[in-house]
Image 1 (cartoon, rainbow over the protein chains, first blue to last red):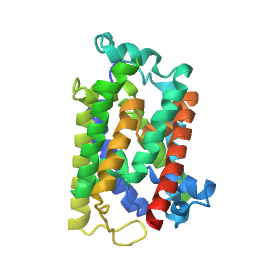
Image 2 (cartoon, one colour; image 1 turned 180 degrees about the vertical axis):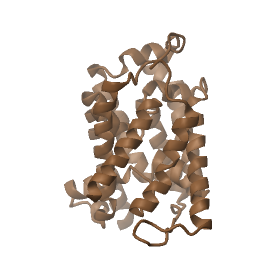
Image 3 (cartoon, chains in turn red, cyan; image 1 turned 90 degrees about the horizontal axis):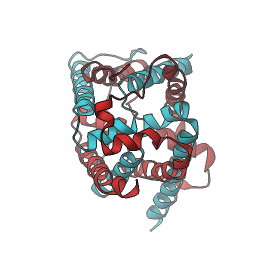
Image 4 (cartoon, each protein chain N blue to C red; image 1 turned 120 degrees about the horizontal axis):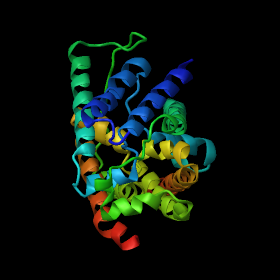
Length: 163
Length: 138
């Protein structure tokens, strides 16, 4: 597979997860509460994790499905292919080795931000950007704008500085 | 059985993210540098589909599989948390190219990197838990 699944097919399929979860599970789409759910099993002494975590248990089960997809689907299709034209960018060259073991610490630190930020903002791309904006929720619009400001800052300033 | 259904939904969602490369560090950099419409197309059409679905559910009073009315509540506005948390999350997203779903996908795809990311996220959540608990005690 040279190019990714077209956005006009993938986007609507992604959007359909919202009504599917509401109808089948009576749940609003979100993923980052799975961290809090896991925290409720691991960090019982911290107040934040003492909550009715069972209502978020499904997010953990959903996450296991994601891990399995990450294991199986790449055996069937080349999910990391980019065209030679695309690779011919500064970050295209970085991409060739970004997932190598030497970047473990880099990803760990990035993960700190993902974990802390998503829980502070009370949601991530799933809960705010997709579920929240589709309800025209102000908190989700504000959060998504800030996700992008953070991402733009890193892509233009931090990544070129680091690599 | 409920567990299997959720797992299948997660697997299907992950399959779409993989096929469209939305988990990929490269695609996220491309998005933040405005060099491709791809990720914007994915996000906008996903939001549009979700929004239309919610309107249909509301208008036709669609019920859940258990026969309950479907209610949707927007997340509460907390400007400080949404802004600071949002900026921090955005930094993490830009650095790793992974938000929460791709983070799990990477555990399956590149397990060393994925596990490092996951452990980072769990430490981040733990730190937030301490921060949040203190904030409430003040």
